[in-house]
Length: 366
Ligand code: PMV
Image 1 (cartoon, rainbow, N blue to C red):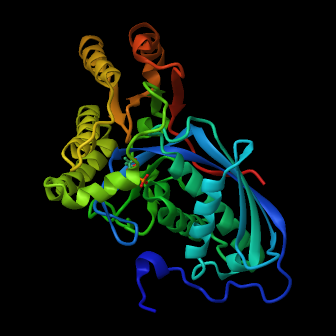
Image 2 (image 1 turned 120 degrees about the vertical axis):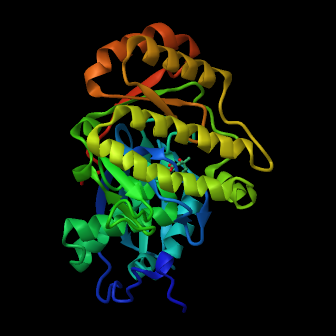
Image 3 (image 1 turned 45 degrees about the vertical axis):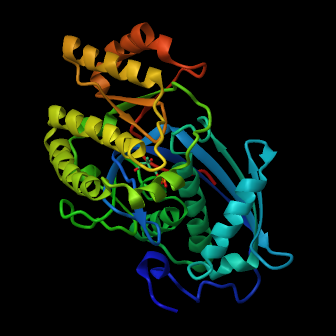
């Protein structure tokens, strides 16, 4: 087999049970993340066309429990319960994902898994549920390896491998295996970054950003019409793809500098420009599509106004959906809450908003 680091980097035929196949249970809680510089466009296998940087969230998370044991027949045997209901689609997706990991985790082929997973936020609403879900699953499989093979003993090795595995499931998930501020994708702006896994950069950012708030304004919490997978694919023929990848590379350098020095104006400028560039890519794809809703724009206009009149450094970003992430320093949370409740409430859907903030990253619960 050809060695391709994007998929074979961690191949290890030794990770197979020679004696009895153990049973047990592992539970991980993993948060979602919101990108400031966006990953949009990929190359094989699941590598980003440009580096991205994100805040890991706190309240918006997936909790996944994995009960495992010896497969009765040919493994991996997977059952998947999402919320309280068996979910055939997740079951089938997880089964194929596990099969794709046979080179990295040969033991998976000997096992059966009963997975129960739930999110604290609406599924497929442009809040990265695939990021938190894939990160939790990757962390769980790495925990099984660590417990039964005695490998991955340092935190650095453990989380790096989990990030690599999460990336294979969903690109942005590579950033959810760490807390705080995380880069995924190689950039000259930061030593240690890689296209293969996420890299936490808390040490380099001003402490104000580690307590930043993200209030997710739910304009529409329905399922989005065009999946991220399709969106990434459409970048292949987007006439603006090359300049966009270049812009993202420059943005990450400027943003890192601003986050290091605490330069709010530049932070706001780059973050909002990134959100609009992401949606511009959707609008200039073929077929073109629009994920923003009229109330997305109504809210954005109110944010511009509020920032100008009150001189408070709030800004917005968008994920691949209509919901607006309102970002601001913790010290302004009272005034911003007042602004949301008084001026933005009329533009929100039935689910209101999620008052989230930058968080510490995933947690092993069992
Ligand atoms: O990880 P994916 O394939 O779901 O893509 C995520 C893309 C964005 O959320 C729009 C941007 C990002 O970097 O998270």
